[in-house]
Length: 144
Image (cartoon, rainbow, N blue to C red):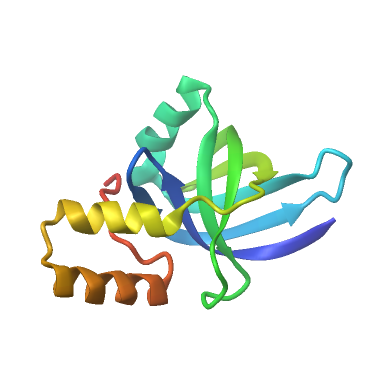
């Protein structure tokens, strides 16, 4: 097994990415025959209802993460939420999943979001470049 620091976490929704403010997190490559990974996100308890709803749906949750250094490109995982545990005044969410062969189309999500904001062609291009350079720092609705 190999363990890495989880730097950022985003939940991929239909046409957007939901930024999750991590307090801490780790990701473990289990290096098993199933190629499974474990992700643990330690976050503010204000996210409890959001993750509880995802858990209760029982569906796969696509997450996009940056591992080890913020300069690294995001990686997408198809996961299931295994547990949500309260730890003091925070919560720990444990995911299990597999690395997706092709990264979720991050550029397409960014572009759809910017088009939805009604940016003109030059503004659209500049903002698109800026967001892609900053990688996962796209703003989306987040649970408060």
